Image (cartoon, rainbow, N blue to C red):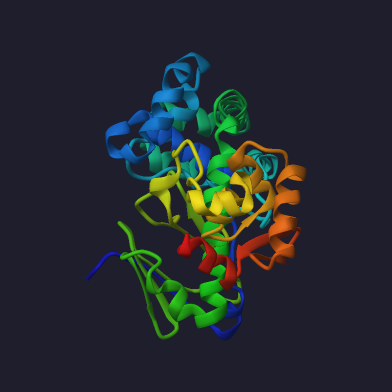
Length: 322
């Protein structure tokens, strides 16, 4: 028998498929990349940039919970509870994790009699606070500077996948999510190293794109919100230093910056993501997008709290023709 996680969907569960992404997830699994760069060659530019600084941060307690492969306790990678990524919200979920559940997960990760397990058993709250402090230090000193770049990649994936779900339903959404993920009728099967079968029971499924968990999928089940983390699209472009160059003819027509913005909108993006990518202020990007929108080259759409821009067919034709 194959080793799989299998979720059974009811009608309500299909309607409750939703997306989010987590700065905490990315921070935690970036530490795995730092510990074993050979397994995570796609992130070597990040590793080279930050690894010399990490050793001085004193993250020993935290690193004991993040092996180079295998199980990472779910309490330090909880399913995000808001569609708007927020590190502080994620960190509060870690801080308020039930101590008994935390001790059980740590024992599974590090072994029933390990010193780490014993510390969590005898002083669960103190141990959790040390993990929270380690995550806070790593975020403030290292990862926060790199989060905007990761954010832009994950945001683009969510927008693309949301369109797939809207146009073709669950079948089209899961068709190319990952080779280890298969949709069959009312069931979603995920190849993992452990078995689980259960109804979603109206909770729906949370889909979380991830950059640093690439190229694998990950599943979270009861007692957490059912969640599937999957590799984000375009991971090979994550550490490119510059947005794509604009063709010379297009730059001559629109101006170089507007041409580059239009070229970059091969995937939909928000003003904030574009501003980070181009190292410009949001107001400057907004002015360029306004001109492109007035010319019929891009279109606006509000998704939650953000306005997202995409190229129109006229914009596509102009970029391709140049």
